[in-house]
Length: 332
Image 1 (cartoon, helix red, strand yellow):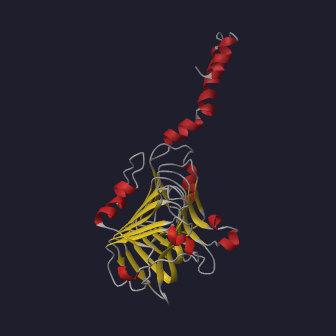
Image 2 (cartoon, one colour; image 1 turned 120 degrees about the vertical axis):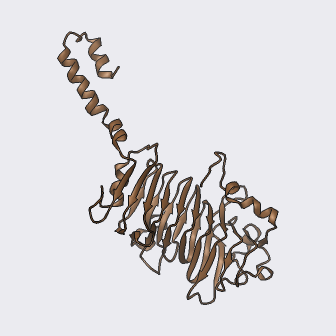
Image 3 (cartoon, rainbow, N blue to C red; image 1 turned 90 degrees about the horizontal axis):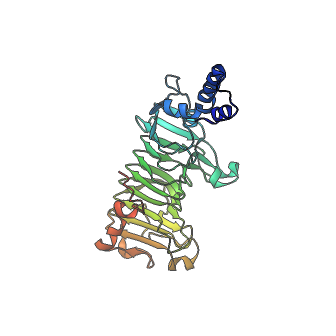
């Protein structure tokens, strides 16, 4: 029984049916409004910059989803260039951003760490909700060179990105915690443009360096942490890379990055890895390759403190094993 009805019953107002009816209406309209919104919210929300959808901005569609959402809701984003800073807060779980074509569906914003005051604030899109998916979307920070500028900051678990593009220069893709799976994606930048403390797997992705620098900067503070980045059958290319590009450097001492059966272009430096000006990190960083291919694959010239894995060792880093976790997550 609703609480107001219990109160009225206690005070013996049962003999006044009109009062009871009014209270019932009040309960349904006021108290039940949140539940009604959840029931009435459609499974697909359409965003179109030209006004032909349910919303004109992506953030408006996100805000329409109730906090503590428990079902998959697709935000279909029609082709267009959406210039807005986007936030998916932690309560907006089970969201999917779905575009028709990543080339023509662009979420973009211009903001640098110098302007924002911190790299963690200098994002175009932020995702803080678990079980997020994105398909056929471009995430871009249009700031350019001269400062960190994040296209996507994700701090959430069980996220999947398929056929997406991530455009920027320094610190393009900030994967900060949780597990993420990237498939058939394009990621570009020049310095530390894939970085963070997440446990992330990249399958069949195109990684493009737009200048001399470092592809990865992984953050791991202890050998006991099971995080790291794995690149499986990815393609690394470069342009205007000058003296070349390192596969990665350790943002923190125990950083872990693995390339498996990936094609490395001639822009990749023969030594492969950098110690971030700290020889002590050579004893703790865990940088490895298995069966690299292409002109940048020079295993005999790699730094002595990196690893060349055996086939058996590489199996540890299959997506189904590396990302499984205690919940046995199936990302596909």
